[in-house]
Image (cartoon, rainbow, N blue to C red; front, side, top):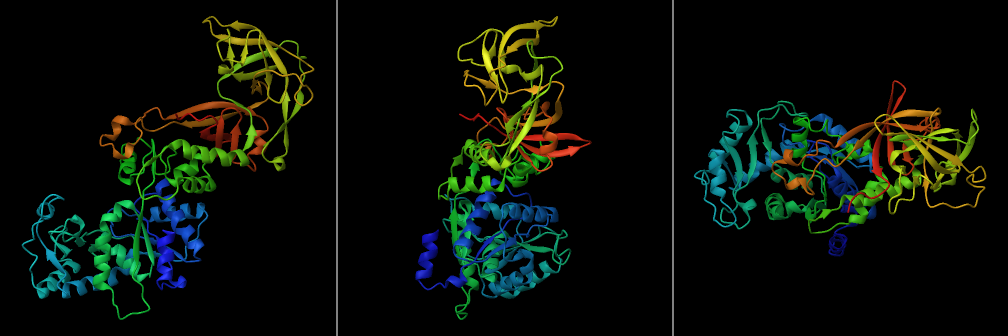
Amino acid sequence: MEKIIENDINNGLSKKKIKFRFPPEPNGYLHIGHVKAICLNFDLGKKYNSPVNLRFDDTNPNKENQKFIKCIKRDITFLGFKWDKESYASDYFYNLYNLAIKLIKKNKAYIDDQPKNIIQFQRKNYFEIGINSTNRNRSVEENLYLFKKMKNGFFKEGFCVLRAKIDMKSSNINMRDPIMYRIIKKSHHRTKKEWCIYPTYDWTHGQCDYFEQISHSLCSLEFENKRPLYNWFLNEIFDNNLKNKIKPKQIEFSRLNLSYTLTSKRKIQYLIDKNIINSWNDPRIPTISGLKKKGYTSASLKNFIKKVGITKRDNVIDLSLLEFQIKEHLNKIAFRIMVIINPIKIIIKNYPNNTIEWLKAENNPENINYGYRKIPFCKELYIEKNDFLEEKKDNFFRLYIGNEVRLKNAYIIKANSIKKDNNGKIKEIYCTYDPKSKSGTSKKKVKSTIHWVPIKYNIPINIILYHSLFNDKNPNIIKDLHKYVNYKSKEKIIGYAEIYIKEAIKSKKHFQFQRIGYFYLYKIKNEIINFIKTVSIKNKWK
């Protein structure tokens, strides 16, 4: 892309006239795929010191909503970008209408009142030649008259359309007399009931680029086959006498497809309608709002896009690469704390009764400026159930009868015996500790270190764990989506955290629950602290 731009500069394009735009349709929230387009446009804008417009393609009042516009602007700001001009396709409705009249007068557009299914049938497919509409040879005067009646609301919705007159025999179906205007009798979020005809994206896109003098129109690869149409429209309306005007150039790049995630707006809306997910910002889907709610940072998303790169070929990127980027960033900024989510009780038999010892721990070993915290240590503790086995197994180096482990930031303990309940489940583990093995003062080594919290001195917290929403690697191409949904993708549990967490949440939102994963402070309600898991410490993807 940079080579294309540099070549245009070498061929006479002034650097002052380089201009980009990001043109989302406000019919849903932005997702991870849009991050790629946003970064591409704004980074090129930064490289060439060029403005980037934010233009909303609001040409379909059936799907668009003001709330989507607010969220789109919020998401772009979250990513750290600032647009030069905020505009809307609806700003140019009169310009587009007048240009359509210009095409009709050139005998390059006509009104077609055939049923929709007939029009589709006549366009045929790539292996058949299209059939001309019976209305294709209407006179210019009749087309102008009918188009005016369309605009003034004389016809019912769906009664007729305005089509460009190009080539029904073209091997590119997009050139087989595409629709430019259709009748939609619904109030628009900005123009209200001023219009009852609305331009299609194909007609709007290039012309709005021309109105705003966008030099390079960057589009995803699905628009590559539409580039001839983009250029045809521009050639028909472009005035060579206006030497100070530039003709926009469309350049395509591949979409970003992420494994086990869904980016189709239509399918996301289906999941919402079927109550499979709660909303557009559900953390189980890769909308920017959903990822942000899950604890993803803007830096991690932008670093992910840099790692993926810009290509011309579609492919599916493994989710593990996105998770690696967030882990790499959170490792630098997350506050460390110990949390037990599946507790089992241990009693240190030789530790003094009714004694509390305050131990010192680093808040983030990657950043000395995070300082230290104090952790209360006492006789009775919780550890994770999966950190203990009654009998040793191969490659298990944590706590089992007769084995020693280090309690993080504390002492080395040894498991000696257990107590079971009437159902045979382990109720308590009896241990002894080595008083001379305190962390930071002892050189004694063991194979494993486990985390813990004191039973009397901890804070219960609510935790939401989100798992993959789909059991298929590429849900974007699945037809019967509901068959592949993981209906156990959301899990609510209670954890037991160090008491220092109450102090830490006053200034921090990103936490590493040591040995478990990274978590995001979602909300505090009725003094209950709620966390959402961002990502595991270990890579769960093969």
